[in-house]
Image 1 (cartoon, rainbow, N blue to C red):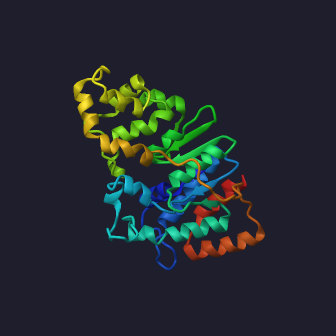
Image 2: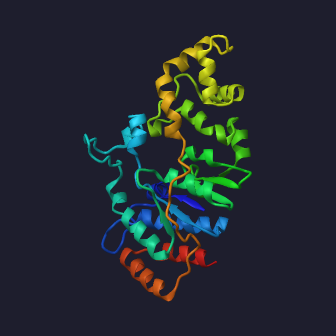
Image 3: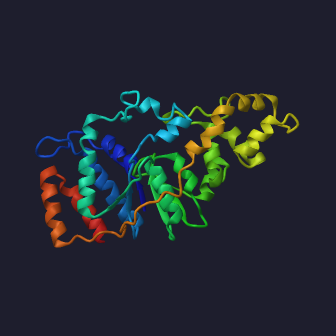
Length: 302
């Protein structure tokens, strides 16, 4: 099981009241909510291995160079030549190091990669792992990883933890009319305002799916748009001509990287040794983790 960690701790932060605090007054709603989310996932899906995938770089420069608007609206302060900082509630910023500290103490593997997002870590691990994989995320872009032949599924959290949707290649094709290997092209055409991707004006999901069904992939669609004898309607050709610069780079931005040189990690579910229990008891007392940490440890032990 591969966790899109930021997606889940943001969900936890907004799903648990900020009145949940440590004894020193530090908000721990995201920490406790995240632990409860993992406990539920482990209980319901019973993974043998678990990795918390991390955004070492939430807005990689190489993606921004291709599409400057990529996640630009989520940057807290734009500083020329500086490091982009994601606009995040201060109460959550303070909790992210605590989340990492607790995951480390529990023994859950954390994996990130320089200059890449958690999506790319997930894409690589899902590709190289020779076993069934569940990817847990609220990000539709990761639908491109669904693969029924290799038993890679997406556990989609957008409708809440009590209403999880398991996305497979089959369900993806049934819902959107596109194959998983076409999904990145589909997403590039559709665009995504939450990521600052404009898409192709006038091309919605149904039209994008129909074009992919007819021409196979984005390259085929662009070629047809440039060919006046292709049969593509003039209005559609004009739309793709207007978006030519965007489409030349969008696939590289939308496609997750699948070949990162990641470190070897022990992703087996951790055992709570006596030494680890002592450290966890201290953390639980310090941060007021109470039942949330207990539920996670119980889920892992089961």
